[in-house]
Length: 156
Image (cartoon, rainbow, N blue to C red; front, side, top):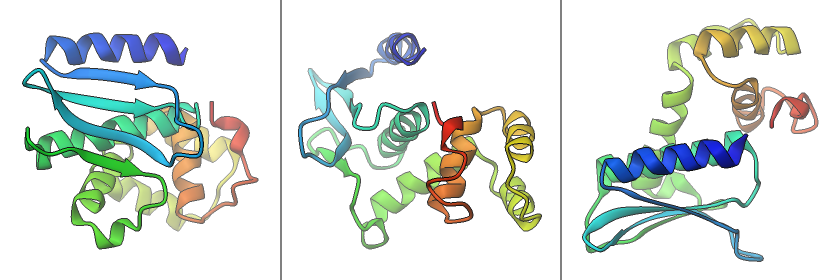
C-alpha cells in the first residue's frame, strides 16, 4: 500500500540524512514537490495531488534528481505540474532522470517500436523493467502512445 511504502521510503531517507515530508495537496495548487533545506539537511516535500503510485514515485525520484544534480542549501526548488520544463533545464534534467530511472530508454524504444499496447504487452514489459504496470501505462499516456482513457485501471 502507498502509505506504508512512503513510510519505508521516509525511514530510508532519514537514515541518509534527508527529510521526507509527504503532505496533502494544497487546494488548487499545482505543486507536486519541492527540495529545500531544513536544519542543515536536504528536505524533500511531496504532495499527494493525484494519489497514484506512478505519480508519487515519479515526483519522488524527480526531487532526488534535483538533490543529486542541483542541490544548493540556500535555494528551494519547487516542481509544478504544468511547468513548461522545456524552458527550465533543471526541470528537464530531473524529469529525464526520473523517466529513465524507472524505464530503460533503449528498452522503451524497442517496446514502443512494436506499437502493441495491450494489457498483456504492458504487463510483460513492466515485469522486465521491474516496475508496476501503472508506471508503464503512465509513460505511454504521457508520451501519447495511448490515450488517458486507455488502460488507466492499471494505474494504482
